[in-house]
Length: 142
Image 1 (cartoon, one colour):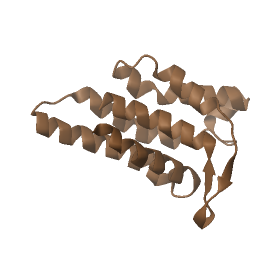
Image 2: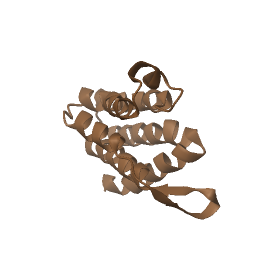
Image 3: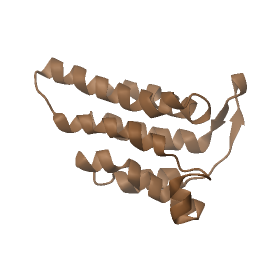
């Protein structure tokens, strides 16, 4: 049932990547933590580690573009993307998902095209892969 959340997470990530940054930065982690809280209330238990997903709000706000701290430190785009993917894996490492750095570094390393869709948005294959990977990890730990 939790996997029904995946398309919503992917849509928030992809839309937030192009226009409304808050959808990605706060929508994805906010939705994940809300679902964790609802599940905790339902199961009458507190699993505090799930709440480390709120760190994604900060991590997704860092950015990895031309003017980012990552670019100033690592200089090369492909290294920046790997470093950013590994950084995004921190909450998942706390939750014991040891494969997260590999998956997220790989997903953020992919460069692919896309096509125009309505409203001036682009459907970017690389964003679909990135946010499907991130969303899948979120669903996995919930």
